[in-house]
Image (tube, rainbow, N blue to C red):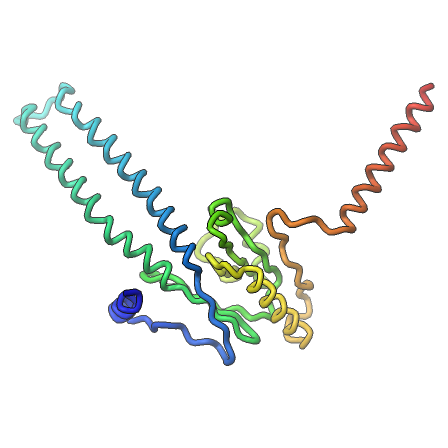
Length: 257
């Protein structure tokens, strides 16, 4: 069923079934099955919200004919008939969009490819609006694992990769960003996120050791995963600062006596 749907979509939209790797050999990753469950949950929440909004709108329109309005030749019965027509139209529109938006969710899950080669990664996602991004490991600066509560329940996470030149974009709020960030890539909804992060760090480190990166690039430092333990030297410094504060407080007390 999935193969038939993919063939139909790629034929209609004239998309290749799978993006070509920048060079061989290449490893191909896909979004995990639980990610489809995550997309369905998000779709279901939107549908429930739309249904509640539709029901509230239908409820309040029932009171419109009772409001005294000067409608010229229209009387209350004409207004009721017009409102009933739009009510039926809204309900039909809501029911008709369900199979199409559900199919869009399915395609969003299927039309995702994450390709990793020795020197670069390539990510392609989307159906109506296709986004394909190629990023050289020589310019990779940050690799992080992002995971929310629902991701944790489903056992999936997103691997975020940021390349050189993307720091300025991250300084601004994403709501005010114009267009996609070409220095930011996501391996969304993967279960083997730790293996992918380790693979990307290894490839990025290998590229830097080979001298392929820019001279001014900072050393690759991955962003810590949420909940990751702090480094040992940071903890030691914090304990030392705590002990010094206690000693200073004790010295002040002795002086006051």
